[in-house]
Image (cartoon, rainbow, N blue to C red; front, side, top):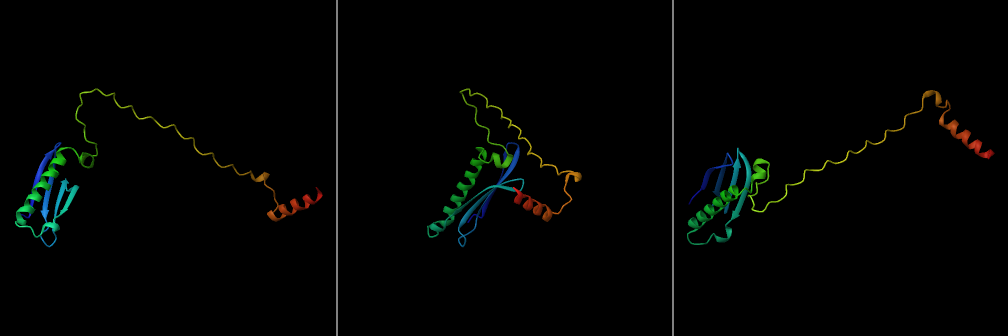
Amino acid sequence: MVVGFNHNVMYRGDVFHIQTEDSGVNNPHIITLLYRGGTIISSKKTTYADILKVDNLDHVVEELMKEQHKDMMRRLKSGEFDDRAFGTSPVPPPSTASAPPPAPPQAKPATPPPPSPPKAAPEAARPKQSLDEIILDYLVAGDDK
């Protein structure tokens, strides 16, 4: 039984590591991890619990591992992980039709600042009465009207 595969792959000037492991019949799954600089960029886990009783299980699992490992390499080389690995979208292949260049982003209009709260009245303009006195004066003046 093969325990796993490990490959370093050079892509866009960086080394990526692809690791595929079999967890064994007690935990029947195959895990493939794609690393760049110690960071996992992608992973794929496949179970094979449904084929545990097949003849030649070791050979079948080894073939599944190889295919999953190669698939991760193909996906890397196709640019599928460029955004995660480099923070950019994959570069599309050149086309034969000439497309107009994308329009530059439009600047958003500046939002005016919210109005400032009204300023408090100066001390001289404030009445020297308490709130109770102001209310009482108001009520008394209302009786005259």
